Length: 214
Image (cartoon, rainbow, N blue to C red; front, side, top):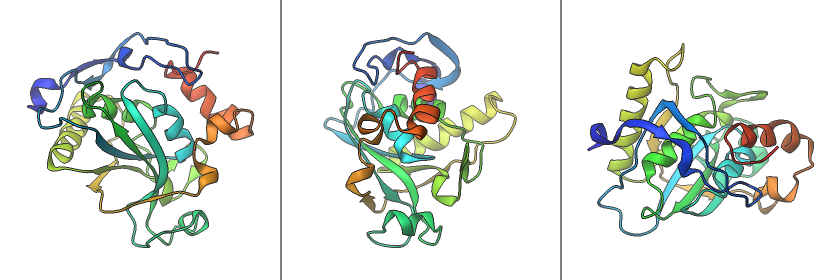
């Protein structure tokens, strides 16, 4: 099934901006994508991704049509209920991630995967921009065998297409436990749009993706 749906992605699925303004993106033929649903998904489903600081990743997915809720948190490590400080130490094994609840009748997991890879550098090991450490690694935490297969085949397709000069380093692991981050991390960009990191890092990324008007 995955081979049939891996085609060039039209970014126009991203139709709502972080300011609430609709702005359809132009066609981008660099990334494989999909416009069909997983037949087995008939209710709301979950996707869990890590691609650097979760303030940034949350802002990317927050207002995508079909996304019901985005929660920043920690996953992929060994410590239960870690604190932000513990995760930043690098000793818990956790990554900063977001967990997305979405409606598969509106947006597909394949489309979420495409946006995930477009929104960060999946070839950078344990680093996104100035954020360095294993907690900032690129990671997909799958919730089903189908999601696992789709993630691996998507990565293989990107590598085969030679879209990057280096291979993808994104981990693909089972989502065993997800721990929501502290409340002050939730909806961070919306709460603090004028904060330095939000202005310098998050806002330009959203603008580049067509999710925030200049």
